[in-house]
Length: 309
Image (cartoon, rainbow, N blue to C red; front, side, top):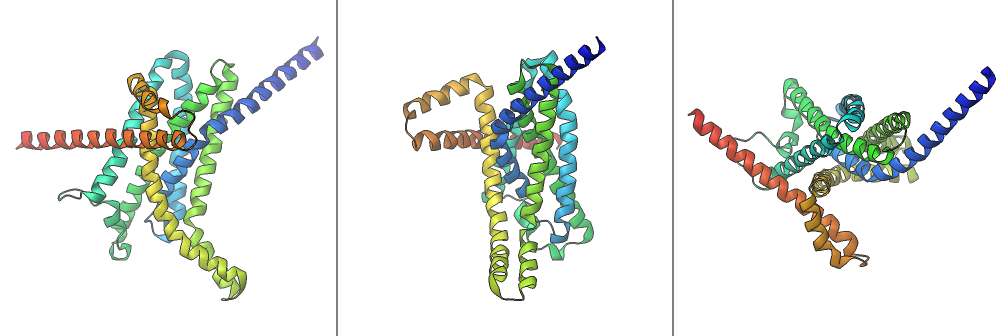
C-alpha cells in the first residue's frame, strides 16, 4: 500500500509538472510583448546615469523589481481567489499612471514651463558639474521612477499569466505565475545591463585589437551605436508607456473597447493597416488619456495653491 501511495504521489507530481511546463510556455508567449515594453522602459529609465554607476543602478532597480514581484504575486493570487473583480480596476489605475507619466515626459520636453522640476534632458545635461550629493539624488530619482514603472508592468505580466492559468489547480497557478515573474525579471534586467554596457564592450574591443582588424571595426561600431541606441530606447520607452497604458484602458473599460473595435472593424483582413492602425489607435488613446490627466492634476495643483494664498 505504501508503495502504491508513493507511485500515486509521484504520478500526481508529474502531472502537475506537465501542467506547469505547458502553462508556463503559453504564459511566456502571451507576456512576451510586455517584456519588450518593459525592456525599453527600464533601459530608458537608467539612461543619463554615470557610466561607472550604470550596473549598480540596474541592480538596484532589479532588486526593486523582485520586491515588486514578492508583493504582487501573492497579492494577485489572493485577490484572484477572494475578489477577482478587483484585479481590473487596479490594473486600470496602473495603466492610467503610465499614460500620465508618458504625457508628462512629452509635455515637459515640448512645452517646458517655469517653476517645474528639471526634466530628464536638463538633468542629463552635464553630470560633471554636479556635486556628489546631486548625482546621488539624481540616481535615487531614476531608481525610484524605474521601480514605480516596473510595478505597473509587473502587474500586467502577472495578471496575463494569472488569466492563462485560471481554472487550473492552485499549485499550478502559484508555480506558473511565480516562474513567469522570476524569468521575466531576470530576462529584462539582464538585457538592460547588457544594453547600458555596450559602449564599454566597444572600448574593450578597441583596446584588444590595438586599432586593427575586425575587432576594432566591431568596437568602433558599438561605441558609435550605444548612445544612439539609448536615445532610441528613450523614445521607444515613452511610446511603450502609451501603448501599454492605452491597451490597459481599452481592455478594462468595455465602452472604450467597443468604440475602438467599431473603428477597427472595417480594417479586418487588411494585412498592413489591420496590423498598424490598432497600435496607432492604442497609442493615441494612451496619449489623450495621459494629457487629460496631466491637465487635471495641473489644474488641481493650481487651485490648491490659490486656496493656500
